[in-house]
Length: 300
Image 1 (cartoon, rainbow, N blue to C red):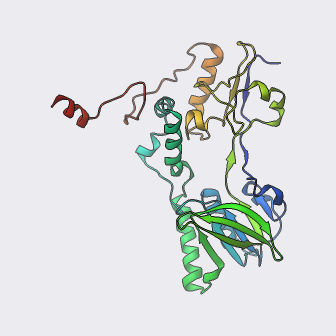
Image 2 (tube, one colour; image 1 turned 90 degrees about the horizontal axis):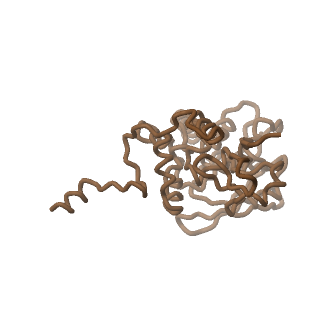
Image 3 (tube, rainbow, N blue to C red; image 1 turned 30 degrees about the vertical axis):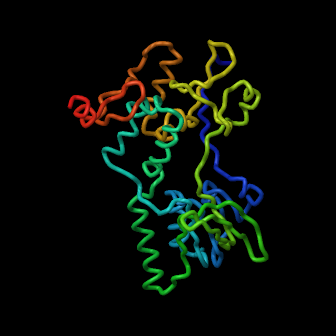
């Protein structure tokens, strides 16, 4: 028995509707990659997902001895295979100060922020990029095996079916407004994970306020909106991408996040979780700051 509950069971592998009917030995999520004993030798393997996980799997497929595929296709809905955004200014996103300003934005502003910060958390590390580039260069220009690797950015997968020889992956090529079909024998879904309530929470699901995707709406202190007694709270972790921004599933603010929840449980300031002095004036609604150009225009 407990007065309060903190649900921190993690996210579940993302398996989109178009892939769900085919999940099995030859179509699986990247989280199962290391547990697959079957050899990929001589097969056409498609890795779907242009982030770091997809890059590491492609590199492993190209360099692991004894199970080299006949062809590796790397499919991404991003326009480029882009590096991770790094540096002191980028890192300011992963601070309590940024979270507090993000929470003042309207929903449209929040969605724009999340979309614009994708490469701050999901880009490719320079070491992986360099290793992949060297291996692909070696194959195309030194080993004279140009057809063993296909890099396919700017493709959004919308359907998957089977033909006489394997899978057919159907994609939209957004830049040219056309469709394309890619053949494969094995499909690896490197498309991340998504937040969700665990199955054991099902008896309470109709008492928790959720967004259209079924993810609980969270307050600033990570409380779910719940119709139970006021003295009983349910906190959600790895469920606050919309409410807290891209820092939510990261480990960067893990200690701060724990402090916020402990303060809420105690009903007092056990830990100082107030934002420190930021070096960036992020856009916020409750404290608008005029730029120097606006001030000059206003004063003549």
